[in-house]
Length: 205
Picture 1 (cartoon, rainbow, N blue to C red):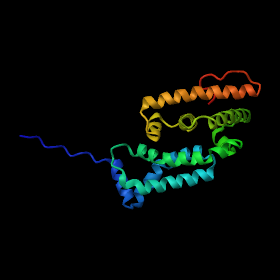
Picture 2 (picture 1 turned 90 degrees about the vertical axis):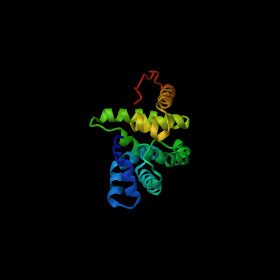
Picture 3 (picture 1 turned 120 degrees about the horizontal axis):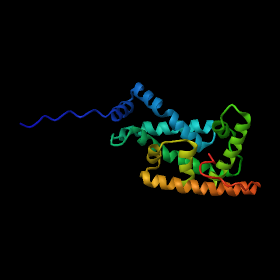
Picture 4 (picture 1 turned 60 degrees about the horizontal axis):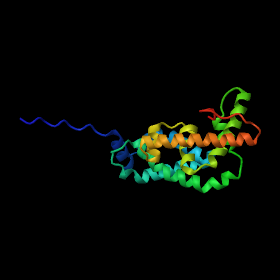
């Protein structure tokens, strides 16, 4: 006698996406609760200030709402959402990159990154960040993008793979090459300022 098929477990991501797409306010609120802060933080790094990050975040969620009906549940909803947000973040980054190269690093970014209670340590951290951001702005886009996601924003490898739509091995190889190139550029900037001490390992972070 043939055994009965066990009922499939419902896909919670797919269920949530379908309810949100159907206009259920509680489902949409749950999506914002799950991913709002993460998407805003990514947007902030690509935008460089709070006002533009908020606008970019709203634009991403609008696109998410319009595309939820296409989600099939074959990948995690978090990764699918990050991938959907990438084009908007990159488009914004490209539009503003030339302008950012001609001005000082955003004070909002420095304040956001250089936290702590010790004023001297905070000031040192801010100066280090100026060098890091300045070097990243001059790097090829794939390197600048992956350094922003991992070393400035602190995304997990899984989230970065989803955002960039890359296999993990490819992503790690790109990150390694980007870090080496960043250290080289920071050392060159420090030498121009009269500091010949080489940067080692993760000392730029």
